[in-house]
Image 1 (cartoon, helix red, strand yellow):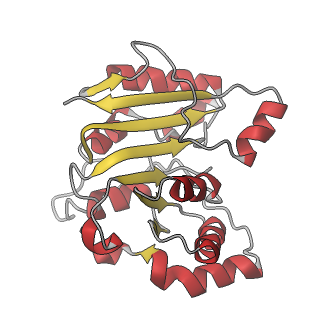
Image 2 (tube, rainbow, N blue to C red):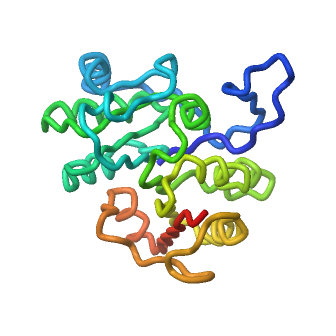
Image 3 (cartoon, helix red, strand yellow):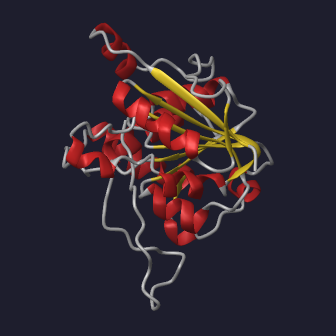
Length: 243
């Protein structure tokens, strides 16, 4: 799956606070070609499922046409897990953010085919979406599954899970909501655990220093199955907002 920005330097005085500048990205936009099906899925279904930064701060009841818990997934890749969760939990509203158009097009096409109505999508940088479009204390859960681990030491600063980032997420969660991470890269799991264990206002659902068993609500994707066949472990971390 894909992943988003990590650092937000201070904005100049003449820069609106709602659009902070940032110099370090935790994702690389790959120039992969879209298939005809992905292009069609994006073009034909964006009006029904797509959201724009220009829409500004969202009113979720208006966006979904109902009041329900909202789950936001950052970097949904090709959309497999997001689609499965939306299918299995129709009582919840799902919001996905992904920067790669092929994955967005594929997901939108499948949502339309299955007539799934409880999903909306941004094809944008998650940092921008969170800052400009997501009301404080509005999300029941935030999900970050298999982000780029940036394994080389000189790239660790690009990892999305950093102290500043997780505090920006905390303000978007309702009290009692949770931030759920998963990775198949053990050093990144340890990095996540270190950052989250020190983060103010969070509590580890598995107890101090503990990793959570994979919950029923997180589907096993093709990406995960491939990793497990190669002998990779998988680590889930779930931290609840307590303050």
